[in-house]
Image 1: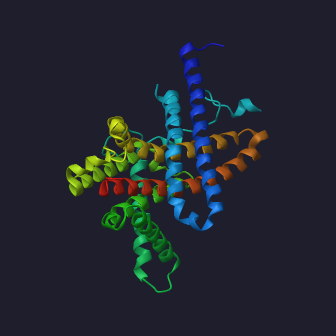
Image 2: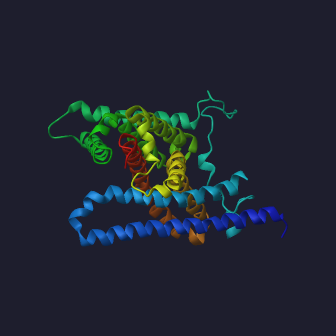
Length: 78
Length: 251
């Protein structure tokens, strides 16, 4: 079991950034779930709101992508 | 069983990020700004595919459309409706730019899904240029159309006067983060999807898990086809949202 402590911390940090992606997953699921529950109450208005759905999903997802990017930077660039 | 599939450095027989390396097309020399690389080749193929679809599709202009004509019309109709719905009627002047963005990104994403292909949009250098050009264009349009009133975007008049300075700081930060999140969203999604496919493909070398890994690759591939379209759609729709903010800054 050789290897330096910096590398250990690097891999632990990469693992911790996965929590951020989990948060984004919850957020995207929340957006889609709320859209669906609203759409089932008033299906005639749902078609006009798909653009809003995708914008909301994109904003929620961006933060998860940021944490993924931090993980990539930690793995390959630091 | 596991040891024969393992490489020296990593646990996999090939590295999942190897697919994003920029290589010269001819020879193995260093990459300079004038070197034709695999990026150059795939950028050319994207332009050729876009031209082929739109030029060949609109050549016949039949009343009963052929297959390529219906695809070209669908793409045109989708983007046209998106711009009209979100940016408004006066945003339609900028429709050619947004249509170009959409066709480029959608073809970059789809051609990147071909086996052995290079995904151009997985590089922040490419998506960064796209997002930065959108950012600069939209800011210029905002100042030309509205003059100093464009700054109303940051001074939220519907809020109480006491918290307006705080909101202004937040609005300014969120405005300048736009090109960053706009480009990283597209590149990150492309990197993540392709890396996951390659990780599952790496497990196929281990005989015990090979069937599961092949099923996982097929599943992820189907999901990536969806993601490739949705990310192009999202990039375009956010461009429309930013354009709407530039044309009508007072919320």
